[in-house]
Image (cartoon, rainbow, N blue to C red; front, side, top):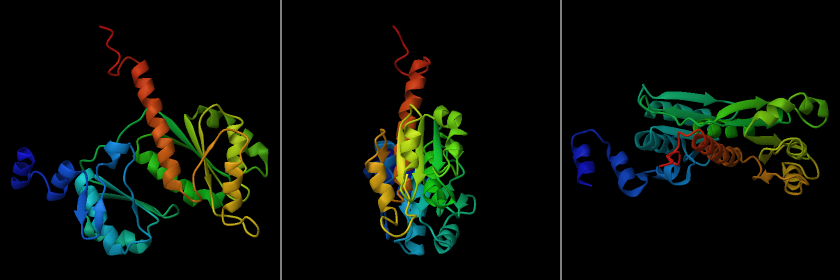
Length: 263
C-alpha cells in the first residue's frame, strides 16, 4: 500500500488508478466503475450510455481510461460521444461505430490483449448490423481476431453455403438474426464450433420485436447458446471467453505455456 501512496504523491499514479488497485473499482460522481472486472472475469467493463446523461457517461469514461487504459461505451448517442471527447485528453484515441452505437477510447499507452483465436460474426441481414456490431466491438477489445459473414439469411440457403468454409474456420460464432431467428440453428447444424445465437428485434406482428427470434433460438434442435434480444455485448463477451479458452489451449499445446516444462 505504501508503494501506491508514494506513487500517487509523486504523480506517477492517479487517485482513480490507486483506488482501483486497492479496491477494484473507481468511484465517481456518476457511480462506481468496475475496473477490476476484466482481470476478475475476463470480460471488460462497458458503460451503457443510453440510460445515462452525456455528463455521467463522460465522467465514467474518464475513470475507465484512467484506471484501465480504455473505455467501452454501448448504446451511445452523438451527444454522449461529444461529451466524452470533450472530457478526455486529446491524445486519447476514439473510435466510433455509428451503426453499432459504440464508442471505444484507448489511452496512448494502452496495450490491447491478443488472442490466438478467431470469432465469426454472422448476420442474417442488414437489420441485424447494430446488435452484431456491438458484439464485434467487444470481441475485438477482448483480443480475438474477427471474421464477418453478412447478409446470409435463410430466405436463400445458398448464401449460407457459399460461406461455409469461413464459418467452419472460426473458433466460435456469434449469429445474429431477427424475424423467426432460424439462422443460428441452420449454422449450428453445419459447423463443429460453438454458436452463440443473438436474437434481434426485427419483425412485426405476432412474435415481432425479437420475441419469435428468441423463442426459436431457445427451441433450437441444434446445440446453440442464446442470449437476450439485442444483447450484443453479452454475445460478444461469451464468444470472447470461448476464444480466450481456445487461445490458452493453443498456447499450452505449442509449448509456450506455463505447463510446457516437462522437468
